[in-house]
Image (cartoon, rainbow, N blue to C red; front, side, top):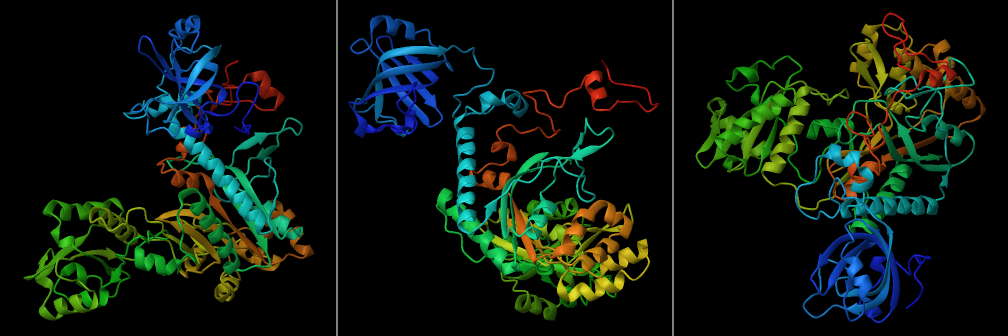
Length: 626
């Protein structure tokens, strides 16, 4: 038996290193007692370490008598070191659920390295309901001993190394960027760090390495990447954490096709090496407008069809008030044809309106197509000619269900509207209900040409849809330059927003989830100033906030662009998890608290004073308890 890489003074290898072919070998193992079984003459201990579990057997024929007695007092989660011999288990006693299930260790020596109290949460739980998540987060260091989390964290590590190897093979340099940065004026709220040395001044923790990676392109590092830690002070959900990790990359002298190839091959390598799945390349591409028009969302699940069909021209002439009211308005009559949907019960059909309303629309209408014709909420309005057109042009076959939503669409290049969101929700709902999604499907796509701007109703101004360094679509640059010649007003901003100007921004989408964002960046200082102006950022403010970037642009900037893949989300999907907390070693709760360490916490007045900070109430009085 050769020496194992994990050999130390406390062990010759890990529990999972050994198999039946090693029978007769002497081994030294260390780990935690997973469980103990006392059969009188024999005592069995399951030893657990990071690699897995192996059975220890203590019996009168091979274990010293005194040791056999002492072993009866050993409890779960005690840390032990054992010496013994690998033997095959007796026939019929093998455990097929363990990779080491054909063997056991005949223990000749056992040392207790640390005793343990009864854990407040079960560690050896394989089946059954887990304790409440808050309790598990309070004792996260114990929860991490569970097999599922051990596998999840190990899988995350493997994915990280695969990404590093792939990007290195493509000529990327891994470069770290600062964690103490300047505040970013756009996007989510920053976490601020007071400076002790510079009174009254603050660093910000990075929301992303965006500006730094652009400066690296100015510096001549053609290909940069980083497994980057990012922090955002934002409201949390199951798929959000205040601190998160992204695969951040930037390249020079490229266009979208070059970036897409790198992103696709990186993902395909990870999926192949971890899941054994061959991702189909290249990913299909849809423009933002196509995605919203066909699927009602900028992150469509392409594992199944059920594309949206516009029936405005076909149904406006029908004798149905809601259809006729769309004439000479921006409202559209758009539909989904659900194959086999006519078999849904009346309650299931009535639920469709609730799904649409929950997404912001007024509701949804439906008709079934049966052997006797159309039946349902607007069936009486369908004359023979209109019914024939629905069959021929919309493809509504016998046994199918036609679902209709009325309202304006954001497919003109602005944000999705309630009708779009309702159709997206109905499509996903029907996809689940009618089992249209293939089991184990892996569908990736790129969504391109995102809108350049969004509109902030409260502030009455334009905001960048992605970020303010995104290159406009070349065909829309003239319209942008014309727009910034006018005075900055709310009316002008709204008008520019409704123009639906496009950008060279893109997202990678997997099974209906956004997995990455990126763009080609602006590399012309004049165009960058124009975009700042469109966002209401004047020359003086632009210099104050972005002067260092604009200064760098004076010295030769290559065309460049990149992407950021959400690494936590990627790891979550690779292990089949449902929350980012499944793959982060020490996550925060949905209220951004670390329960096991009690963070955030109050700071003493003396410590605050050293940072030139005082906490005051609404009347300006010091409210911090000493």
